[in-house]
Each structure stands twice: as structure tokens, then as C-alpha cells.
Amino acid sequence: MSQHPLRALLVASVTAAAVALGAAPALAAPPAPGNPSDGEITAAQAAQDAAAAEVGRIAGLVAAAESQLQQVQVQAESAGIAYEAAQEALAQAQAAAQETAAQLAAATEQVTAAQGRISTFSRDSYMNGAALTSEVVLLDVDGPGELVQRAAMLEWVADNQLDVLGDLEAAQLVQANADSAARQAVDQQSAAERAAADAKAASDAQVAVQQSAYAEVSAQKASYDAQLQAAQVQLLSLQGARNAYQAWLDQRAAEEAAAARAQQQAAAAAAAAAAGARNAPSASGAQAGYVLPAAGRTSSCYGSRWGTTHFGVDIAAPIGTPVYAATSGVVQRAGAATGFGQAVYVLGSDGAVTVYGHVSRYYVRAGDRVQAGEQIADVGNEGQSTGPHLHFEVHPSGAMYSGAVDPVPWMSARGVVIRGC
Image (cartoon, rainbow, N blue to C red):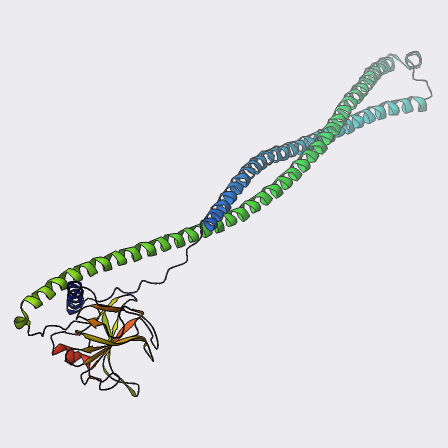
């Protein structure tokens, strides 16, 4: 079915000018990166918050344990000092007891000596045959001189005996008091030393227990710190992936917008160029009635390929890109075609057959008359194709399936440039 001639001419002009200006399809965007779900990110955030809360709780326990440890360490230090002081006091008390024992020994020695002197005097008096009484001593004299001598001796003995006995009693009393006080001090200091030792042992035990508790909560904090770090890394990883995905979306949108702007600019330029060509055909040297069949990038040229012949030109373009009749003529065939999947064959008014292969959709049928530049199909990826493109052939002899020639010079001779070959 034919379209309006003016519309067909405008479409053909836009397409021809776009290709003539070298417009190329947008580069394929990189593959989409992984996009974590909102649930994954929420779960990671919750895990991080839970780990952070636990770290905070354990940090409070660590601080309390550290404070308690400092307290018991101070108490243990004080107990140690008290123990050392008790030991010192015990040593001093023991030294005092030893000193009083020495004093007692000296006093005892003095008393013993005094008693010895009295015993000697008594023994001498007995050996002289008289009782040691003042009456006997004074009557038993040979004369006045001996009387005076014995009276003096009796006075000395009485005085010294009383002194010795007094010294003995005084020394014994002093020694007994001093010895009792020293022994009491030793007992008291021994008890104080034992109490200080017990207090020091208890404080040391408290320090050991508190150190163990502090080490335990510190280890727990280290474990939760590691969990928090892992949760933070996981959250950052997911957020980074989400950011990367968003950046990819933004890039793709920017590329699509740039491609759309480029297409609009190319269409406008093509329309202007086509209008100029129609108004001044002699200046361009082109023959009227020929247009480029599709806008796109030439991906394969006419010629030998891998031991066979490629009989046309491949124009790569996205699926759905318009395909135009390269010249005016009558549709000979439209539909399924071996190798092409689907194809359209047009017998031109100049006697040449043009072929349009791998199309995804076609808008004409056999017998329809078409004008150059009229849309007859869409670019596709049908049949034996490795990517969306239009396969374009020219048969100048008018044969449907043979007599193909290189379309590039044939179209060039008619004012249409196919770049890339």
C-alpha cells in the first residue's frame, strides 16, 4: 500500500542526509551493574545499627570494669603498704623484746654477784666460829682496835646487803614489766601483721578477679567492634552498588538523550540537504529519484567473505529503524525469504531490482507501487543474522535472485553515498 508521496519524499530526504553526514548509532551502554534491593540495604542498615548499639553497651561495661579495676588496684596498693608497715612494727617489737631480755640478763648478773659477796661474808663468819650477829661480833674481840674494825665491817655488810637486795628487787620488777610489755607488743604486732597479710591477699584476689572481668568485657568489645566494622563494610558495599547502578541509569539516560538530540539534528540537516538537492539537482550531479535505504553504520561491504560472496551491503541500525525504497517501482515480493527471514523485492522504474533483507516488519505487498523514500519496512534481525541490520542488494539486470552488483558504486553513480566501503 502506497503512502503519501510528499511524506515519502520527506522521510527519504531526512534519511539520506543523516547518512550523508556520517551519523552513527549510539554506542551500546555498558551492562547494568548489580542493584541491591531496598530490603537488602534496610537489613544491612539494621545490622549496622544493632552492632553499633551492642558496641555502645559493651563500651559502658568496659568503662565500669575499668573503673572498678582501678578502685581495687588502689585498695590492693594500700593493703600492701599496711602489710609492710605491720611487718616493720613487728620487727621493732621483736627488737624491743630482745633488748628487755638483755636488760634482765644484766640485772640478774648484778644480783647474782651481790648475792655472791654476801655468801662469801657469811661463809667467812661461820668458819671463824661465830654467828654473824652484831652482839657476837662485837663481844668476841681481842682489843679496842679489832672492835672498831668489826663494827665497821658490820655496817658495810648491812648497807651493801640492803643495796643488793633493793637492786635485785628493782631490777626484777623493771625487767618483768618491760618483758611483759615487749611480749604484749610482739603479740599485738604479730596479730596486726597477720591481719595485714590477710587484707593484702584479699585485695590481690579482688584485683585478679577484676582483671579477668575487664579482660572478658574487653574481648567482647573487640568482637562487637569487628562485627560493627563488617556491618559497616556490608552497608557501604550495598550503598556503593546502589550508587553505581544509579550512575549507570543516569549515564544511559544521558546517552539516550544525546542520541535523541543527535538524531533530531541529523534529521534537520538531512531535510535541509535533501531540499537543496531537489531544488538544484544539476549542482550536486545526483539523479532524481534515488535515496539511501536506511540510516545507520555500514557493517559489511560487498565482496568475498570466508570462501563465499557477500552480495550486498549491510547497514547496522537498531530494530525498528525505518527502511525506505531506494528508488520508485513496483513491489515484486514481500514476506518470508530463505536466509533473510523476511525481505522485500522492488522492481524499479529503471529496470533494476533492489532487495531489502532481514526486516522485522514490512508495510507493502506484491503489486504495490512505491516512491523513492517511502517507508516499506523496519530494520530487523530475522533469518541468518548476527545483529540487527539491513541487507541491501542491487540487481541491474532486473533478475530477482541473480546478477547482483556492488551497491556502493551503483548508488554513488546516482548521487547517493554509502560510507564505510
